[in-house]
Length: 141
Image (cartoon, rainbow, N blue to C red; front, side):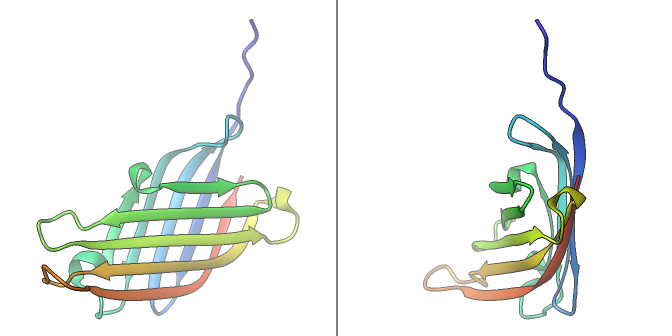
């Protein structure tokens, strides 16, 4: 029996502006739906309006509920909740990009949107929501 060979490549996205520093790195297997491996991401939100516990986060494969790479589009959704015993807080990172030029070159340009939800010590009622957005660039091979 012959087994198909699958090559691996890389994926990275970054943004660095006055509001946010964002970095995503991962391996990508070509074939079998293009799953990611060795996935890591970090987000630094520079706004003091966001509580300190939610300003600097790292993400791994378990925090990546959605991923799409089809040559023309690259999309990622990252989600993480506050891990300590403080009231609920979460950070959602959405990256939406399109191929910049020939899709075979692997360069993608688009936008990020980061939504932070924080109960800020409250146990009832609504928490505080902050949203940040800006340009992001990605490369996938």
